[in-house]
Length: 186
Image (cartoon, rainbow, N blue to C red; front, side, top):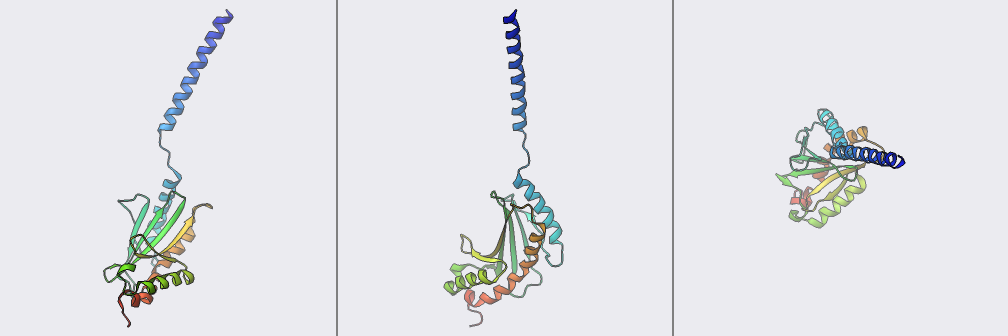
C-alpha cells in the first residue's frame, strides 16, 4: 500500500512538472517587447510631435533599412547648407544617437573630397570643443554633427527636444568650413 501511494505521488508530481515545463516553454515562445522596442516606440512618438514644432520642423520616418533608425530632412531656414539630414538611432547599448549630415552643393561634406582635408578635420575638432553638438566623420569620410544619450536614468524627453531644437544651428558651422571644402571665400 505504501508503495502504491509513493508510486501515485511520484506519477502526479511528474505530471505536474511536465505541465509547468510546458507552460514555461509556451511563455518563452511568446515575444515580449524588448526595452529597445519600447524606447523606439517612445522615440517615434516624440519625433512625430516635436517634428511639427516650428523650432524643429522635421518630418521623421522610420528607416526601411534599419528599423531602429528614424530619418528626417531639414530644408527650410538654412543659409549655407542645402539641407540637413538627421538620423536618430536607438542602439542595442541603451543609447539614442543623433547624427546630422549637412548637404552642401548637392552632396555630403566628405573629408576626402575637401579642398583642404587637414584644415577641415581641425575645424571639426575645434567645433567639438566649442559646440553643443560634437562633430565627427563616419566610415565613409562624411562629416556630421552628433549627440548621444544614455538611457540609464530613463527616457530623456525634454533633453531630446533640446537637441532637436539645436539641429538648425549646424547650418552656421557649414558656413565656417566652406573654404576648407571648396575654396569659397579664398
